[in-house]
Image (cartoon, rainbow, N blue to C red):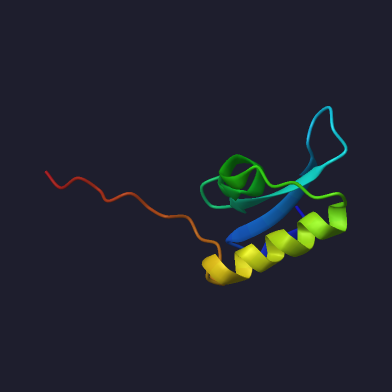
Length: 79
């Protein structure tokens, strides 16, 4: 985990396998899944970890609100 955004969303950077390029991913920590990735969405990669992290943090600040993490409960079926 590289950057937490209100504990709900986080930016992670990783090295793309078999290359020297870095990409960022925004994770939803409640659902445990990637919600956005520079590599999957636009095939954008960065030449350094720092550049990828900066870009990922910028994208996070634009699109994802700073909300606390919490478990989302499913509605219970009333019988």
